[in-house]
Image (cartoon, rainbow, N blue to C red; front, side, top):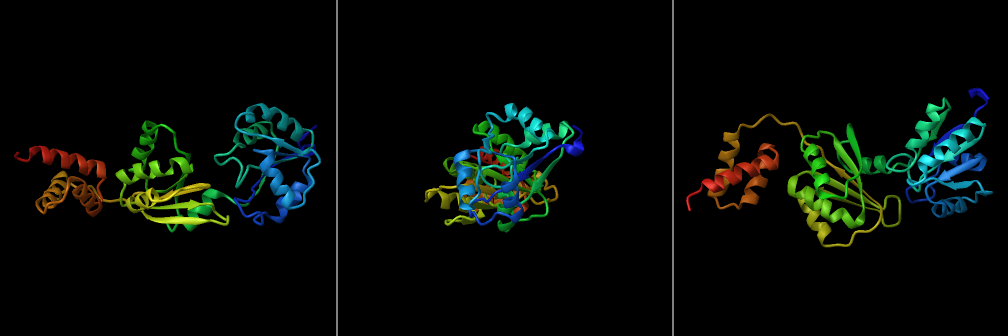
Length: 285
């Protein structure tokens, strides 16, 4: 069978929460697809039931544990002329969700992949964050180990683009506190439960947001949007040290002095902190 007679793989975006956020084209594809692959069949059945779509045994699971094994089967279906639809639990498939391996396999087989675009948690959070949308980078889920997260933070100290990442409710407070310790004055927007009944966006400087989070319970799906660093000219070490001395002379603590000077001069907090430690050691006892 040549490609003209082959089928099609369509990635279909599904609602983040509000089930009305489903396009007419998506509904048509769900009605006509020969097979539909989804992350969790129980979750997806709720979506189809809400729109009165009969599945007729067409729903199959495709998740992180079986995606590699399903690739050959999906390629075979498309090659044989089937209309294959791929969805995730919410949003656009393949963005920190299963799908990218399947897409690569179908393309490698010389077959056609297309999309029925729609909701995306990344774009939704970015556009309501109040931060720059001109250039951004998506980091997915951060590593569980603090040592591995530290490598990301080191890169972000020089990242001028807006940074978007996902985080779980259980780890959010700890991650935001880590970020606040390094970038206390950077702005952040934490979007929770977008398009759902209890949608909320918490905006502010990292240091303030970290305090606010400590005083409350956090639940739901979360996207974090973090301000990138603004380009600033190189500041000589002598200028940084002189500014720190001024702060120490008026009684500022090391932490307060470092925060103030880092923000005032636009110098990385870690760099200012190193100068502060050296100055403190040199003080007469």
